[in-house]
Length: 490
Image 1 (cartoon, rainbow, N blue to C red):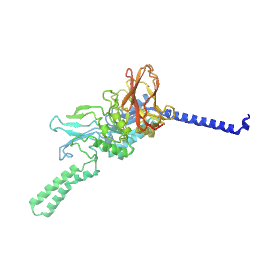
Image 2 (image 1 turned 30 degrees about the horizontal axis):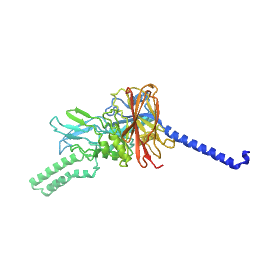
Image 3 (image 1 turned 90 degrees about the vertical axis):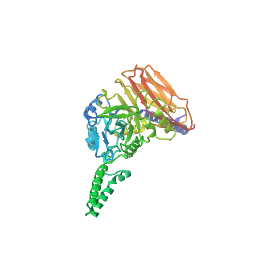
């Protein structure tokens, strides 16, 4: 029959063609969502010679270009100052040790220098950040050898704040303000009562020398204590009380996040024991704090299987499980180079960011949302986790690192890796679901692809998957961020 003489058949054909085009576009766009992100290497936590690093901005940029690092997050120490005072005049009779820092260099000057780098080297993204020591405390005898400074290396990274004033008033011990920023500081003006008493005695008893002298003594003591107390700490804590656990760090988290900053814990598994200028300096591992602090962005992760927060069923899994139960926000892991210039290779520890575009906004978005993985390079290599995706098995829904998807079927896990300069390096991939190791994949090649159909399905439940990769000769390791899956009824 002539097609022109069959309008019903013609219409049906057009509908079929239109449906085919729509479905094609849908599946292409869904797959492109999983593929649209570039994997961009970032070096996070770099110290320059502005604080305690060995190299200048320009020297580090040169190293980054040689190693094809496309994102640099300079994180010089905000304030490197510790003090020990003799109470009650701890701000007058005290010993202070201070080294170069962002505060000493000039906060506005530091931010301007990073902006100038961005203008000069547009092929690299530079994100402002600082390393912060929110709190430390003293124990022991000032005159003995047991005087100990605790938690000097209990540090955090604050990334992405823009205003110099936001950095200036970070709640850090030994960061002072002319204004009593906390209500609790008002009580530190108590010496005014002694001063007014002294003035009253001097005026009231002009002819009585004894009373008048008491007035002068009161006036002198009041002025001394007022001068001592007028150094208002921006932190509401002091260094002469006991350990305050999470509170000073939560203050910093709350302050920075209100101003658009991201907050990551630095090396929480590491221990630091030292003796500096006759003082014991002691920081014990503090990864337990990750459970108690709230609303921070994430943490640096170590690749040591004996200490890492990423070990199966360790602290990180506890936190992710709590998130799945609706009890808290998730946290993400980053690779932290903590570069001072003593390491030979700026690219040894990287954070691989999933970016739509090479811009500061996209870098911040990836860090904030967990769209990244941490990578250790013991030898220079180009190993890449090309794809880590959870889907519904029918290619209707895809989830990437940091994302949450809803599916009504058993999840399908897709993993793809590649390495051109060491393709025959054997690798082990460990798949973790809800803090439990559920599958191990072993390959004799770094160029590897696997589809794994998980049998787990529980309507109404929220779960997560993450992976860890290690090469057979320990050339490289990878720790991914999680993908969350919420099951809905079929």
